[in-house]
Length: 440
Image 1 (spheres, rainbow, N blue to C red):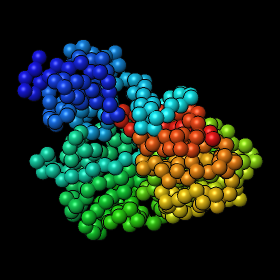
Image 2 (image 1 turned 30 degrees about the vertical axis):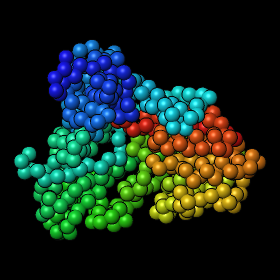
Image 3 (image 1 turned 60 degrees about the vertical axis):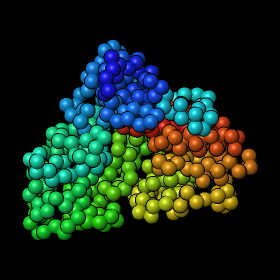
């Protein structure tokens, strides 16, 4: 069955974005909404010399892994890509993506595959960036995520991956923005949900009038939220009311810790999975009370402070001065200042001599951004055997850069990849978080 735009396809695999992969007429077809093993009718939406992009129109033979998407906006809203797949199958896909990246990019395999780490599949997302657009043709202001494969804002009335109280405010937020003096100059609202406070950060491209501020305060009182204002870059963000500056925090209950942060700081979006990830990382590091431990890309101390409760000494290295201030404050607040120290450094520009200058570490934790830890992997690969940590744990938000760095550590430095596994930090999305263990 084929016309100029419609194909009958057998789906052979899934890619990292959850699209079905098929072949026709010597070309690859990526089919949005299709699952492994399915036969589908798909309509081509984009043609390239070596591949086509298509969207599913009808399932001829369905996969047993196909699920009914719980959200009525799935398929239009681009916030989720995998709600049509059972959560357990999503996890298997992400685990396979990690293994494929290690094998094909790094040319390395883990000796052990770690059990999958999962949490709740709905209401998990405590960090989000909501797009805002004034669209008169659609009745006014829209607040939500972008449409799939589009720059338009989806017309959504609820979001099942946001906490229910935040989802319930999507429509009230529309009315609020419409009441402001320049609703056409409000591009986004960032959401940060702590254990005891919810903060909305309003990005505004024009100065707010006094009556705008009163509207925001009235909304905050009615809905029990806190407003921050961001007139320019992230450094310009500030609370509408100064007393609200230090209201955000999340708990690490296994360690009796509370981590304080500001809405512009990086924190994990999924607090339940983050707690499990911290516990697994420390368990895999096998820290002893006499160990000296390095926490590279330490951020605000998400791993550093729990490590300081188990190790003799922890040294956290981070490129953001703002995050380090938060880390030092929390270490002092929670009685750990004598066991953990922090230093500001660009870890993308270090070498082996700098690493040697820090002194010897028995254990090392690495938690880089999506760019990975290329310079650090190269430096670790040139250390003499007696200079190397006895064990390293690498937490990654990008399997491609983890695989690249694992390849360097293994093929250049002779490190062994003892274990690796996927972490479902972002259920229903194609995002793959992972954790890996290396030994010299």
